[in-house]
Image (cartoon, rainbow, N blue to C red):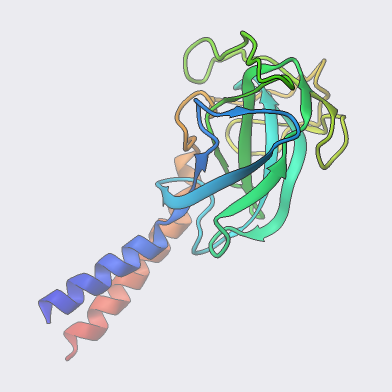
Length: 218
């Protein structure tokens, strides 16, 4: 009986605390324009969009600084990240080339997860010299743009603050929206505000309590 109870508790906690964890691309990734790539995630993150409560997500190609993240392209819209763990994408031509691009996964409740910055090269595979600088949360980064290709055209459409709250729409040249601590600089999985997961944690605790009470009755 004790084993069964512990197994149930572990199962409930695991399910309730599964979050979108982007795993590819990562810091050493180099995308070549025109190639087909796969964006992948698992459920190993401790923060971000909760797969148990808000699995419907959009996937974006991003650029910009830690404080002002600029959306370049919509890679996928309204997909179920719990049942679908990857999407494919044809790499656009960008300017400038370099390690200044990243992926953002945004739930329909406005909760975000990020990859770290990775490189988009030129057509010959030249990675350029641009790369992240500064400390986590203060990376000035650089802002790229799509020259050709992509799903959404060549015009950047929005800025997003690092806390996951949509900020004032900006363009790549003069974005002014600001946010707090950075995410693409931090880790391959990204970071998010702890306040965004409190509801899921409370729900998990309640579910565990109900499950344990039911088993203890036998």
